[in-house]
Amino acid sequence: MNEAFVSGSDAHPLRWLLVDEAVMGERDVVVAACADIEGLFVDSPSTVGETTLLGCHPHPPLRRALDALAKGAGNPGGALYRRAIDVTVHSVGRNGRVNRLIDSHLRASVTRARPSALGADLVDVTLDGAIAEPMPSAARPIWDLWHAGGPTEPGLWAGLSAELRHHWSGAALAHHRADAPDKPAGRTYRLDGRHVTDIEGFYCAIGEAVNGPGGYFGWNGDALHDCARGGWGAAAPFRLVWHDAGVARTHLKARADGSPAEAGLDLILRWLAEDQIEVELG
Image (cartoon, rainbow, N blue to C red; front, side, top):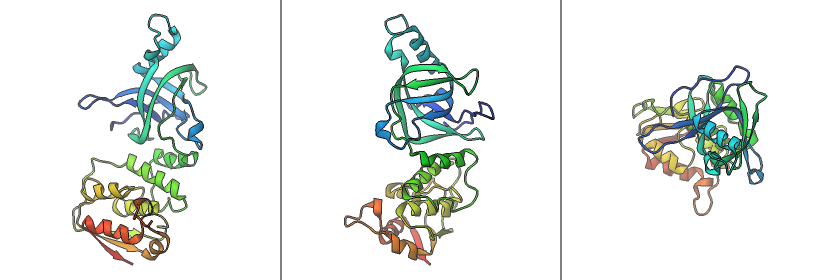
Protein backbone atom coordinates (compact mmCIF):
# COMPACT_ATOMS: atom_id res chain seq x y z
CA MET A 1 0.00 0.00 0.00
CA ASN A 2 1.24 3.50 -0.69
CA GLU A 3 -1.81 5.73 -0.37
CA ALA A 4 -2.35 8.06 2.57
CA PHE A 5 -4.54 6.87 5.44
CA VAL A 6 -5.84 9.32 8.02
CA SER A 7 -7.96 8.19 10.96
CA GLY A 8 -8.19 8.18 14.74
CA SER A 9 -7.99 11.06 17.20
CA ASP A 10 -5.09 13.32 18.11
CA ALA A 11 -4.87 11.59 21.50
CA HIS A 12 -4.98 8.06 20.08
CA PRO A 13 -4.08 8.05 16.38
CA LEU A 14 -4.58 4.79 14.53
CA ARG A 15 -0.88 4.15 13.92
CA TRP A 16 -0.97 0.60 12.59
CA LEU A 17 -2.84 -1.14 9.79
CA LEU A 18 -3.36 -4.86 9.35
CA VAL A 19 -3.47 -5.53 5.63
CA ASP A 20 -4.45 -8.64 3.71
CA GLU A 21 -2.02 -8.44 0.82
CA ALA A 22 -3.92 -9.65 -2.20
CA VAL A 23 -2.58 -11.79 -4.99
CA MET A 24 -0.82 -9.99 -7.81
CA GLY A 25 -3.13 -7.75 -9.81
CA GLU A 26 -5.67 -7.31 -7.03
CA ARG A 27 -6.01 -4.55 -4.46
CA ASP A 28 -4.76 -5.02 -0.90
CA VAL A 29 -7.51 -5.08 1.72
CA VAL A 30 -7.32 -3.27 5.06
CA VAL A 31 -8.48 -5.63 7.81
CA ALA A 32 -8.13 -3.26 10.78
CA ALA A 33 -6.57 -0.03 11.99
CA CYS A 34 -5.43 0.30 15.58
CA ALA A 35 -3.67 2.63 17.99
CA ASP A 36 -1.22 0.03 19.29
CA ILE A 37 -0.36 -3.66 19.02
CA GLU A 38 0.67 -5.73 22.02
CA GLY A 39 3.11 -8.26 20.61
CA LEU A 40 4.74 -6.01 18.00
CA PHE A 41 7.51 -4.84 20.36
CA VAL A 42 8.58 -7.60 22.75
CA ASP A 43 11.82 -8.63 24.43
CA SER A 44 11.18 -12.39 24.69
CA PRO A 45 9.45 -13.46 21.45
CA SER A 46 9.45 -17.14 22.41
CA THR A 47 7.11 -16.41 25.32
CA VAL A 48 4.54 -14.54 23.23
CA GLY A 49 1.62 -16.70 22.15
CA GLU A 50 -0.94 -14.08 21.21
CA THR A 51 -1.37 -10.59 19.81
CA THR A 52 -3.76 -7.88 21.01
CA LEU A 53 -4.92 -4.98 18.85
CA LEU A 54 -5.53 -1.98 21.12
CA GLY A 55 -7.89 0.81 20.16
CA CYS A 56 -8.91 -1.10 17.06
CA HIS A 57 -11.22 0.13 14.30
CA PRO A 58 -12.32 -3.05 12.50
CA HIS A 59 -12.73 -2.99 8.74
CA PRO A 60 -15.13 -5.47 7.07
CA PRO A 61 -12.84 -8.56 7.20
CA LEU A 62 -12.29 -8.18 10.95
CA ARG A 63 -15.94 -7.30 11.51
CA ARG A 64 -16.85 -10.64 9.95
CA ALA A 65 -14.39 -12.43 12.24
CA LEU A 66 -15.82 -10.64 15.29
CA ASP A 67 -19.33 -11.54 14.19
CA ALA A 68 -18.31 -15.22 13.97
CA LEU A 69 -16.81 -14.99 17.46
CA ALA A 70 -20.06 -13.55 18.83
CA LYS A 71 -22.16 -16.29 17.22
CA GLY A 72 -19.97 -19.02 18.67
CA ALA A 73 -18.59 -22.24 17.25
CA GLY A 74 -21.27 -24.75 16.33
CA ASN A 75 -23.80 -22.05 15.47
CA PRO A 76 -24.64 -20.82 11.96
CA GLY A 77 -22.01 -18.30 10.87
CA GLY A 78 -19.81 -19.06 13.88
CA ALA A 79 -17.40 -21.56 12.36
CA LEU A 80 -13.85 -21.26 13.65
CA TYR A 81 -12.39 -20.63 10.19
CA ARG A 82 -14.48 -17.46 9.94
CA ARG A 83 -12.47 -15.95 12.82
CA ALA A 84 -9.13 -16.26 11.01
CA ILE A 85 -7.11 -13.41 9.51
CA ASP A 86 -3.89 -13.50 7.48
CA VAL A 87 -2.22 -10.09 7.40
CA THR A 88 0.95 -8.02 7.44
CA VAL A 89 1.50 -4.99 9.66
CA HIS A 90 1.87 -1.52 8.14
CA SER A 91 2.74 1.70 9.96
CA VAL A 92 0.82 4.93 9.46
CA GLY A 93 2.81 8.16 9.73
CA ARG A 94 1.44 11.36 11.18
CA ASN A 95 1.11 12.56 7.59
CA GLY A 96 -1.10 9.56 6.80
CA ARG A 97 1.43 7.75 4.64
CA VAL A 98 1.37 3.96 4.94
CA ASN A 99 4.55 1.86 5.03
CA ARG A 100 4.87 -1.91 5.22
CA LEU A 101 6.93 -3.40 8.05
CA ILE A 102 9.44 -6.02 6.99
CA ASP A 103 8.75 -9.60 8.19
CA SER A 104 5.60 -8.64 10.08
CA HIS A 105 3.26 -11.44 9.04
CA LEU A 106 0.43 -12.44 11.37
CA ARG A 107 -1.79 -15.46 10.80
CA ALA A 108 -4.19 -16.00 13.69
CA SER A 109 -7.80 -16.24 14.82
CA VAL A 110 -9.85 -13.90 16.99
CA THR A 111 -10.33 -15.27 20.50
CA ARG A 112 -11.55 -12.27 22.54
CA ALA A 113 -12.88 -8.76 22.07
CA ARG A 114 -13.82 -6.00 24.49
CA PRO A 115 -14.66 -2.28 24.32
CA SER A 116 -11.47 -0.22 24.27
CA ALA A 117 -10.55 2.45 26.78
CA LEU A 118 -9.01 4.39 23.87
CA GLY A 119 -12.29 5.37 22.23
CA ALA A 120 -16.03 4.85 22.39
CA ASP A 121 -16.19 3.25 18.94
CA LEU A 122 -13.01 1.20 19.28
CA VAL A 123 -12.39 -2.35 20.49
CA ASP A 124 -9.44 -4.33 21.83
CA VAL A 125 -9.11 -7.59 19.91
CA THR A 126 -6.99 -10.57 20.98
CA LEU A 127 -5.73 -13.14 18.47
CA ASP A 128 -4.26 -16.57 19.17
CA GLY A 129 -1.02 -16.12 17.22
CA ALA A 130 2.19 -14.10 17.38
CA ILE A 131 3.66 -11.71 14.83
CA ALA A 132 6.33 -13.55 12.85
CA GLU A 133 9.25 -11.20 13.55
CA PRO A 134 8.48 -8.90 16.50
CA MET A 135 10.90 -6.12 17.36
CA PRO A 136 12.56 -5.47 20.73
CA SER A 137 10.84 -2.89 22.90
CA ALA A 138 13.89 -0.64 22.58
CA ALA A 139 13.11 -0.30 18.85
CA ARG A 140 9.80 1.46 19.52
CA PRO A 141 11.39 4.96 19.74
CA ILE A 142 12.84 4.43 16.26
CA TRP A 143 9.34 3.91 14.86
CA ASP A 144 8.02 6.80 16.96
CA LEU A 145 10.62 9.01 15.28
CA TRP A 146 9.53 7.99 11.79
CA HIS A 147 5.86 8.32 12.75
CA ALA A 148 6.56 11.95 13.65
CA GLY A 149 8.11 12.60 10.25
CA GLY A 150 11.49 10.86 10.32
CA PRO A 151 15.04 11.99 11.15
CA THR A 152 15.87 15.59 10.28
CA GLU A 153 19.61 15.39 10.97
CA PRO A 154 22.22 12.70 10.28
CA GLY A 155 23.80 10.41 12.84
CA LEU A 156 20.87 9.98 15.22
CA TRP A 157 21.58 6.23 15.09
CA ALA A 158 25.14 6.66 16.38
CA GLY A 159 24.35 5.88 20.02
CA LEU A 160 22.40 2.71 19.23
CA SER A 161 23.57 -0.87 19.73
CA ALA A 162 24.31 -3.03 16.69
CA GLU A 163 20.89 -4.70 17.05
CA LEU A 164 19.05 -1.39 17.14
CA ARG A 165 21.11 -0.03 14.25
CA HIS A 166 19.77 -2.96 12.26
CA HIS A 167 16.23 -1.98 13.23
CA TRP A 168 17.03 1.62 12.27
CA SER A 169 17.93 0.39 8.78
CA GLY A 170 14.72 -1.65 8.74
CA ALA A 171 12.68 1.47 9.47
CA ALA A 172 14.63 3.36 6.80
CA LEU A 173 13.84 0.60 4.30
CA ALA A 174 10.14 0.60 5.22
CA HIS A 175 9.94 4.37 4.71
CA HIS A 176 12.04 4.60 1.54
CA ARG A 177 10.17 6.40 -1.23
CA ALA A 178 10.37 3.95 -4.11
CA ASP A 179 8.81 6.49 -6.47
CA ALA A 180 11.68 8.98 -6.08
CA PRO A 181 14.05 9.06 -9.09
CA ASP A 182 17.71 8.14 -8.75
CA LYS A 183 20.28 10.89 -8.67
CA PRO A 184 22.36 10.67 -11.86
CA ALA A 185 25.51 8.58 -12.19
CA GLY A 186 28.89 10.19 -11.65
CA ARG A 187 28.03 12.05 -8.45
CA THR A 188 30.14 12.12 -5.29
CA TYR A 189 28.70 11.16 -1.89
CA ARG A 190 30.34 11.63 1.49
CA LEU A 191 30.10 8.97 4.18
CA ASP A 192 30.61 10.04 7.80
CA GLY A 193 32.62 7.12 9.17
CA ARG A 194 33.06 8.32 12.75
CA HIS A 195 30.49 5.85 14.10
CA VAL A 196 31.01 2.88 11.77
CA THR A 197 32.01 0.52 14.57
CA ASP A 198 30.05 -2.45 13.19
CA ILE A 199 28.56 -3.56 9.89
CA GLU A 200 25.15 -2.25 10.93
CA GLY A 201 26.68 1.19 11.40
CA PHE A 202 28.08 1.03 7.87
CA TYR A 203 24.60 0.46 6.44
CA CYS A 204 23.19 3.36 8.48
CA ALA A 205 26.03 5.60 7.32
CA ILE A 206 25.90 4.76 3.61
CA GLY A 207 22.12 5.13 3.66
CA GLU A 208 22.51 8.68 4.93
CA ALA A 209 25.43 9.42 2.60
CA VAL A 210 23.27 8.62 -0.41
CA ASN A 211 19.76 9.53 0.72
CA GLY A 212 20.14 11.97 3.62
CA PRO A 213 19.06 11.64 7.28
CA GLY A 214 17.27 8.34 7.82
CA GLY A 215 18.16 7.23 4.30
CA TYR A 216 18.41 3.63 3.15
CA PHE A 217 20.92 2.04 0.78
CA GLY A 218 20.99 -1.60 1.89
CA TRP A 219 21.00 -3.43 5.21
CA ASN A 220 22.95 -6.54 4.22
CA GLY A 221 25.36 -7.47 1.45
CA ASP A 222 22.72 -8.65 -1.02
CA ALA A 223 20.58 -5.57 -0.41
CA LEU A 224 23.60 -3.31 -0.94
CA HIS A 225 24.19 -4.90 -4.34
CA ASP A 226 20.50 -4.50 -5.21
CA CYS A 227 20.57 -0.81 -4.28
CA ALA A 228 23.65 -0.22 -6.42
CA ARG A 229 21.78 -1.57 -9.45
CA GLY A 230 19.46 1.43 -9.30
CA GLY A 231 16.07 2.43 -7.98
CA TRP A 232 17.28 3.27 -4.47
CA GLY A 233 18.43 6.86 -4.73
CA ALA A 234 21.69 6.78 -6.70
CA ALA A 235 22.70 5.47 -10.10
CA ALA A 236 26.13 3.84 -10.40
CA PRO A 237 28.88 4.41 -11.15
CA PHE A 238 29.49 6.98 -8.44
CA ARG A 239 32.22 8.08 -6.04
CA LEU A 240 32.07 7.61 -2.27
CA VAL A 241 34.38 9.63 -0.03
CA TRP A 242 34.59 7.66 3.23
CA HIS A 243 35.70 10.01 5.99
CA ASP A 244 37.34 8.57 9.14
CA ALA A 245 37.65 5.15 7.52
CA GLY A 246 40.17 4.18 10.20
CA VAL A 247 37.27 3.65 12.62
CA ALA A 248 35.89 0.87 10.43
CA ARG A 249 39.38 -0.53 9.85
CA THR A 250 39.79 -0.87 13.62
CA HIS A 251 36.37 -2.17 14.56
CA LEU A 252 35.05 -4.23 11.63
CA LYS A 253 36.52 -7.71 11.69
CA ALA A 254 35.59 -10.35 9.13
CA ARG A 255 35.11 -13.99 10.03
CA ALA A 256 37.45 -16.48 8.47
CA ASP A 257 34.74 -17.46 5.97
CA GLY A 258 34.09 -13.82 5.01
CA SER A 259 30.58 -13.90 6.45
CA PRO A 260 28.68 -10.71 5.51
CA ALA A 261 27.27 -10.54 9.04
CA GLU A 262 30.69 -9.45 10.30
CA ALA A 263 32.26 -8.08 7.13
CA GLY A 264 35.58 -6.34 7.45
CA LEU A 265 36.48 -3.12 5.68
CA ASP A 266 38.35 -4.90 2.87
CA LEU A 267 35.33 -7.05 2.05
CA ILE A 268 33.03 -4.01 2.03
CA LEU A 269 35.42 -2.23 -0.34
CA ARG A 270 35.38 -5.27 -2.62
CA TRP A 271 31.57 -5.26 -2.63
CA LEU A 272 31.51 -1.57 -3.53
CA ALA A 273 34.07 -2.01 -6.30
CA GLU A 274 31.97 -4.82 -7.80
CA ASP A 275 29.08 -2.37 -7.99
CA GLN A 276 31.10 0.36 -9.73
CA ILE A 277 31.35 2.50 -6.62
CA GLU A 278 34.75 4.16 -6.41
CA VAL A 279 35.79 4.67 -2.79
CA GLU A 280 38.22 7.26 -1.47
CA LEU A 281 39.28 6.53 2.11
CA GLY A 282 39.88 9.51 4.32
